[in-house]
Image (tube, rainbow, N blue to C red; front, side, top):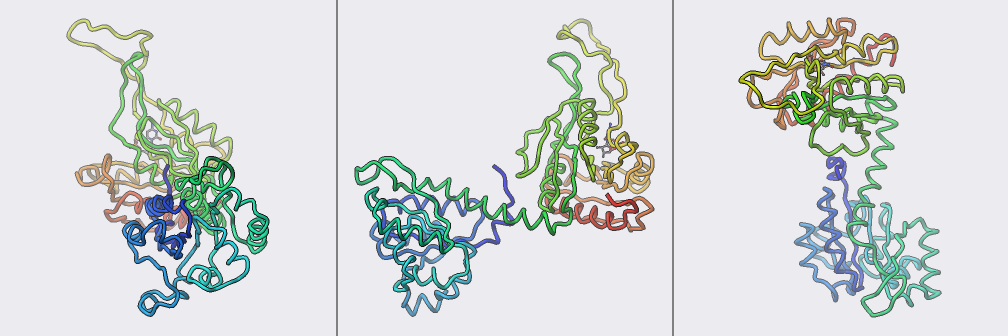
Length: 421
Ligand code: C5P
């Protein structure tokens, strides 16, 4: 699964561990949350420390573990009020029935119950206990109170319990809990992007990767494009609030989170899908694909057998996808790419005009440190004359950063667009 690490790395999670045998699962929970990129601090009750040591959580979270409310040393580090303000989410896992009772009653006689009252952050509890204790009237009463108070309860699973019983009370697996937390922040971020992002409400189609032109059933003509730039742009457009469809040639990359992906092989297929997507509505078309300029005139029905020292394969020109889309009546804002080794400005602006593009991003492929298979890129962006925007130099940076700057360039140009898309 892929996700936007930059969002998660700015989020602070308190994992509160209370006394129950499921506390051993919390170690993996902390690990998974860290894998997602969250900052994690662990709070432990006294009961929790009977099952697992603070040292385990200190090593996994990379932070001192918080155990005491009235400890001068701990308070001089990060006091309980500071900790309460630090948290973007408090996840109590496992939540014992004693902790649920304290929360429901509003007690503040240890660090965790005090944090619960002192924090404005959303509180999630994952109750885990013996099935009889879970079913007890007092526990169910407290559960209802917590739900009424706005606490998000992750219900326990049914199954065999460490105590030998079978029934409800097992803490869900840590991987599933961590994924729910990630999903929660991802959705919150998406809601903001859809409203306020630079490309909020825009429908974007991006072509990416190489195309593959068949010679016979087992052979083809292609190129070294990896699709990395196009995939990074798809992720950046989605993060900016757009609805994104990625038309991908044969590449081995994970689909960015939230992006719709359609796999194609040949240039003809890429063009057909582009036209179909245009019919469904498209505001911005970004052509990053390295489309094969030629295809085999007559694809052999059967595998061509070795014979003679030479083999002639006749090629015909492929349609220019970006230029074809730019000629359509319902024309989106058109972004093209150019890879050049010299005369960058002349060639790039030439393509801008000939293909009737609104913007073109050009990279110098004579440089060995950027481009095709690299994770870095550097580009010069040119706009069509009507935008009255000066060319932009995007200095060498990871492709994700270049993608973000391209989104900003598209946004700026759209502000000058005469017929709003
Ligand atoms: O002419 P050239 O291949 O250098 O142009 C590059 C730009 O045109 C890129 O944006 C590329 O995706 C697009 N293109 C296309 N269809 C083609 C060839 C190039 O969409 N057949």
